[in-house]
Image (cartoon, rainbow, N blue to C red; front, side, top):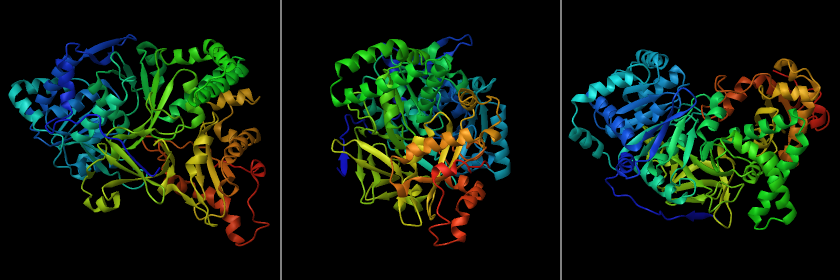
Length: 625
């Protein structure tokens, strides 16, 4: 199949906008709980729709009193917390446009986003963020930035007091002035290459996508559903789910500290969660390590194999009797404990941002947590496609949501069209022709549609490696498998224009001490020593060898190096959404790459003395940076 289009299940009136979701919930007899805030004692305080609508309206009046006009841009910079969502909707109630900024952004990134968007004001979390905004404004001459308000302290209360003189009629006029065609937000891409580009997303994008997703996912978004938000709300994935939850009347809690995620999950007990694949990898690996440390490693691995086998059989339509019995036994021994660690009530998880991996998807499905893997971009308001409980095929990112369409171009690139697609890049009309072809958005990803219309992602177009021998290699096929191992944190496959494929590997510092101990090595071994340890290098070589089995010999990794510093956002090698900044990695580790490929270049054309070492030989020479 080369193209699939799914008609919308619902169409909204042209005068609609995102704030209608809040008013609809507030006016309903149920007056559902839309949010829950921590009470400081391990519990949660419910915020019902009517209360949320009233508070968002008060803050919106404060913004109006501050001189903001319809269509004005307002920066929003904070960690994931309730006030983020509250202010976001207040901005929309005031008829303005929100511009989210990652709270980890550098001063130059902050200045660029506020300046390029033309922000008139900013709402930030606390003093540190206000200082960063004011410093950026001063350095870059952002004369248009008139106000900076804080969420902490008396900041929001001051806004509420300031809005007391603004009447309800004026607020309603502002709110109703925004229609489906109006700009709702400018979300800047995470910037793996070059300066971030601002994606202009309209009320149409959020309203139509939310309404159709709500109807396509009735089991997940049923009355009484709840979720806990821990991903950055500046990212389009979490942002869309935040709006969708209000549209569906879902109870949302927030946690900004991943270290408190487990106790928060257990106290809040959500019915579904959303996460990136790395979170699910961590859950699996931590469960495995805990079992091994407790002397129950064999039981866990048998249970994991059974979960995967059961899920595959269930997907094929028939579970053998003996497999079903084993599955029920392991549910009592293992699966129930993993679900309990996530609150005990989680039935579904929505995964996006990167490929999950088929085995991991089957494992979680097998333990009673169905992961609904989806696919989208900032440019598509998040989901183009997603698996649903009714239409799921593990290993794919599902079929297009109602109102969306997918086409596979001749070169394999995924093209998208529909209610999800942005209207364009802010201040970049020059990119329109490059971004769109015959009305279809070029996603930059490579994929394929199966006969049932399910989409499978195989790689990123601009990341395809072309070796010196002309072989095309998709790095994600190897990287995802290698990174899934408990020992590995990050993997970057290299080889563009080179005679063979190699890889840079970093170790997971959290998992390393336990791993070392289980392999009869001192748990206190420093990372710089661990990367040089023959046992560690041999283990990494084994991980790579297993990944190599999934590709041809020409695509296989022939050499690798373990580097002693992880690739993180702080190091400049990951975006806030945890994507690898490949170009930056290659630049910063060019000396190691020169060492890997240097000999081959010096003896160009030689196929004997300069042939790359076998992977087993490379384990004895893999060095740290």
